[in-house]
Length: 279
Length: 255
Image 1 (cartoon, rainbow over the protein chains, first blue to last red):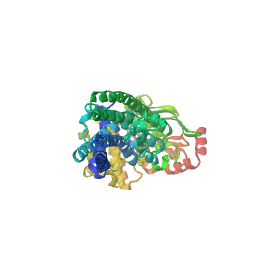
Image 2 (cartoon, rainbow over the protein chains, first blue to last red; image 1 turned 60 degrees about the vertical axis):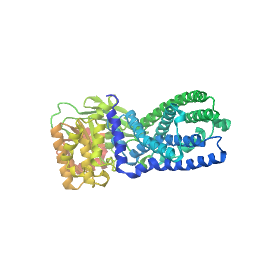
Image 3 (cartoon, helix red, strand yellow; image 1 turned 30 degrees about the vertical axis):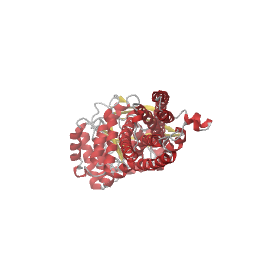
Image 4 (tube, chains in turn purple, brown; image 1 turned 90 degrees about the vertical axis):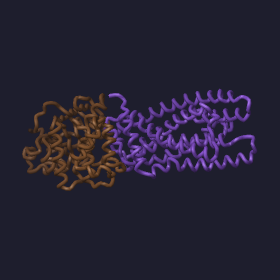
């Protein structure tokens, strides 16, 4: 029996049913990212006013915040879909069915694509309409930026899910600070060169840092005027490194989740997964 | 007991060890088509551990499980596609409606013509009026009916029922038992049933296995087994197995 799109689709359908039946699940798709965009929109507007016309902070800062929020949304799209099974104690029903681990993870990823796309569209609309943010300057590179960030967000989501599967429902609280823990090394707000030497080494193994470095390379050349093509070339170099790293992360986290699942089947954790028994 | 033309479930030398504890110890048995086999024993005897291993959510330390000709270890998805289960400790997600749960699990089990099958099963289990009701707000009896509807959705070859009537009143429990027996007769499914209700076991099961400390202590027809072991009722025999397994084992060895 091969990989089944129907079983993967079942998990997406489950997530859509949950979203449709509960406004409390829809609000967070927009609420926190909306607050972030409004907050950073005003900060960038203020920075533009005090710095004169020398540098436009809107694409540099607000654009970076928006893309980092996209990473967080992708990650949370995975972990939230996974936690639905934790909260409803559904693992026994799921894994006693013909569903494979790869189909289960694919279902989480597809669910995350659906929810994070909605969040991204909302963020872009708000940032464009309220603060005049435009990604046109990035050209085709924007798609590549989003791809790397998407792959990285998926990896983080699978990592967080593996943590909860291994250590039980109380480990849910490990998931939420993961983006905050990584963001200083992701160089969202500042160039990598700003960091002390030891932090730069860590930043170099974070795929997102290559995206934000690439963004800044394009913006810097645009501000400088004469050689926008050079900015794109530099960004492309960053992106190749970021893409390779993101794929390595994805592979590693997929294997980590599978390994944790096998451990759970060997020891009986899946069969008796609940807050009382696992912790 | 119906004749067993073929074997639906074959469990061979199954063991599960947790550190020094042997939860299941060299267990071997078979379930045939239309047969309802009762797996009995006191708490901690190894019944649920055995069921979890047959469901593929717990890896055996040794031994093999074959479901409808498929080795569970080698052809997990095919074997589990022909199996289903209902257990009091595995309710369907309460935040989804009855119809939504049946659709999702129907997709997971690759049920052909799913919409038609859902309609049929809603009627069979008298669940049509709850189609748009979230499972979490149903009564225990209604939730059990939904769990059984899900368990029979893919018309499995093997049905595992872990105390399926534990939370039901006697009238509904009787109805559910009749429903399961009729399903087994009609579809030829083999059923592995655990229960602590010995009257129910005597009424439903063609054959029973008494487990103690992970081993099979007794096996036979639940209607004749008590007399064969010098007890009046199945419940008396159950109590004896729970309190004095060594005495029962000794008597068996002498025979």
